[in-house]
Image (cartoon, rainbow, N blue to C red; front, side):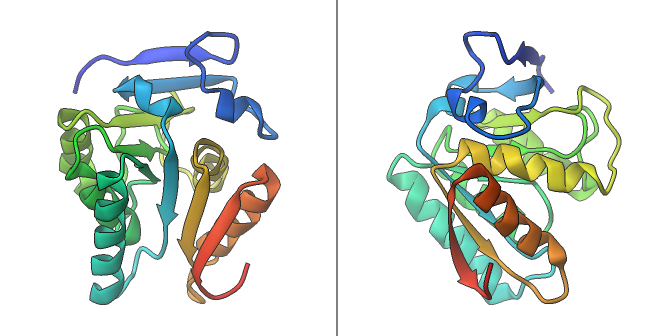
Length: 186
């Protein structure tokens, strides 16, 4: 993959949206179209073990939003995140993935080609975990504040089996961002 840029909170290119959240990431490592950091965006997150219907709906939702010049933000996980990124890729420069790992340590490995496709289609990959940060269960909830912070609105699908989406709802509340919940309660 292409080179990366490292920015800190004092840099002009650091997104103002993230300066408004609690627990501001001190440094960000970005690869791709950094102008997306300041675009109107909606985060779409959900279950890794989604139904085919859920996958299709997330894909179509992201595709329609991206046609309206809205950037899609998600976390590159399997399931709803993957569907959202695939829908966003249909419009060049319309998807951002926020990693819970380093830029050169794409997780899950099954989505390495998707990450490359995001970059090839003028998208953006962002992390606070440097180049080689390992997959760690504590990193993924922490990266949620970046997704929520960059988005004007958030949509999530709560799964009884996975607390992660419920945790994302709580993150939205902490960042003061609206969460449009597609099922369950925050």
